[in-house]
Length: 117
Image 1 (cartoon, rainbow, N blue to C red):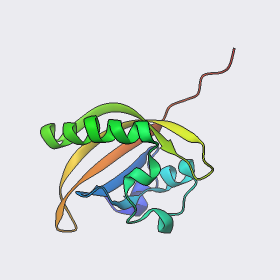
Image 2: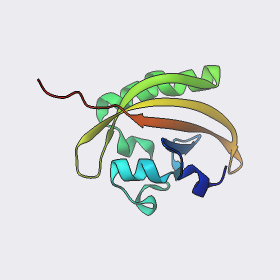
Image 3: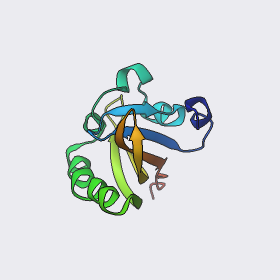
Image 4: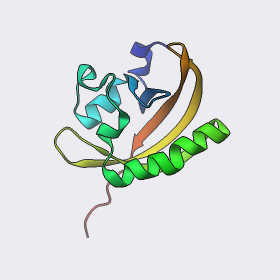
């Protein structure tokens, strides 16, 4: 699927290298986080994750994808450009070849905020 087609999806798509560098990020995810594509490409995904989410990513997300080839669902917070955090539901899969090496593709959906009582 070409990147312009990924931009039409109703979810965020993030493609990572085996070293967790951002190789592609679609328009919905860029819009939700407030970053430009140029700023994010080749950055570590850890630039987008607050400390607790970094730990969860390293301890659960990556090992699950590496061991089983996929991750069904996990909640992670992502750091937005404005400094706020956005909770996302993340699913992922292993990619056999991204630019000559293995990598990961993540699908992300924002978690709706509950109305304050």
